[in-house]
Length: 254
Image (cartoon, rainbow, N blue to C red):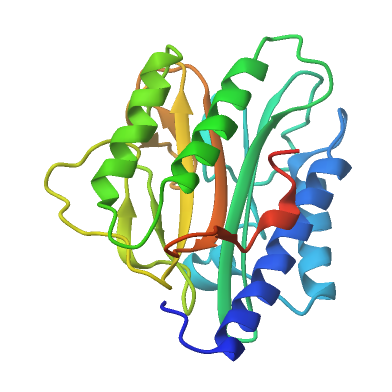
């Protein structure tokens, strides 16, 4: 969507605050020994308390309030009573929701407890790349140039990017134009970021894979070459100067 009024800006901020706060609280609630289903139900309760509705449930009939991906899962992990979190797990929580007709999206990967498996560097790289990408987004900038930046920074750090998972427009629905804000330079994409538009910018930084393949459950995605993936995401408004990060309260850069 494109923000044209103060009312729209406030609506987007309220929806973004909801998903950001839920993400932050879910991350704090996560601990070894609980199931991803317990973590998801906690997130669902928080969304309900705020009057927000789960976007993946509304849009796709996803079997969970949030997407929780663990270790080798790249994205869209289904919350399960059988998936028990362990010390050192690489965990990704993606929270998106609708509130009063506005939609916002955010997510973040983190290491649960002590980094006994060495995932910390991947997580930090993904965070740093997202920060750099967002700082370079302004009205008129080619979307493909941000993709180039993300992939270049990933390669410098010794990583790859997942090419079939992308950022996207958001606001009046979960996915809007521009439909693909890729993590690499898509030379066929001639679109530019538009001032006052709302977009969800996300990184998908991988230790090995370049494509995310859908698993037998029809939802969960894993890398085509194995390894691990870190994702971080903010909903922002494109401007010509100062950044407007609607989901800043999620604290993924803390």
